[in-house]
Each structure stands twice: as C-alpha cells, then as structure tokens.
Image 1 (tube, rainbow, N blue to C red):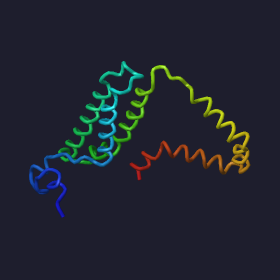
Image 2: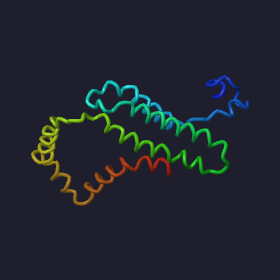
Image 3: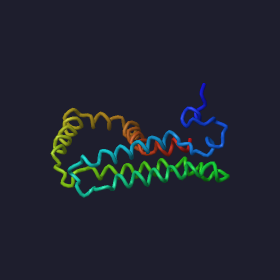
Image 4: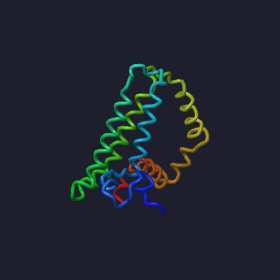
Length: 161
C-alpha cells in the first residue's frame, strides 16, 4: 500500500517535505469544495447582479483560514489548534448558510408560498394529521420538536461526541 503522502505529493511519508505539508481534514475539504463551487456558479445568477466577486473573495478567505489553521496545527504545541480545527467547520458552515442568501433573487416572486400553504392546510386540517399528532398527547409533538432541534444540533453533537 502506498503511503498517503507519497500518493498525493510524491514525497515519502517520513520525509521533511511531506511533514511540512498541511493535512486537510475531510470536513475542511467539503467546505473548500462548497465555497469553490459557489464562487464558480455565481456569475450565472442573474437575479443578483450586485453580487459581483463577493463569493470568490469569500472562498479565498475560507481557503486561507483553513490552510492557515492546517499549517499551524503541527507547528504549535498543545491542543488549542486541534480544538480550533474541530470547531472551525461548524463556524464556516454558518457562513455557508448565510452565503445562500446571496443567491436568492433581489425581488422574490413568492409564487410558491400559496401552494405550500394550501398543501399544509390540506394535510394538517382536511386529512386530520394535526389531530392525529396531537391525539398522542405530549409524546409525538415533543418527539417532532426534538427531531427539529437535532437538525441544528447535529454538527455540535458530532464535534462533542
């Protein structure tokens, strides 16, 4: 089996050249790919002409932060940088979430909302799903609220445990 350093860089794993290269984690690669993708497709979003080069510059900042922290980790003793690298993807994920707002049209047409509201009314009222959920007392509504909460807490849960 070829060591990863040799396969990726051409340097043997125990060489000084391989040791000087930062190792990027899987979650960091996903964020790099996401921000690169968003910067690449930004010119085709005609609904926000004022967007300009912001996605490109934001991608560069994210790449720089991830690269700097990956470069610092083997050079600074202790666990502070490793801890920072554990939590940094969650913070950058919040930036990615906010970046999505850049790609909504400046004048949103709201043409889908009436259909969504009608389907909610049909499912919850006419098909009596609301009554079925509430008939279980506290159990099912609490379970559904917990599921909704866990959607937002799964990143933190993944880092902590």
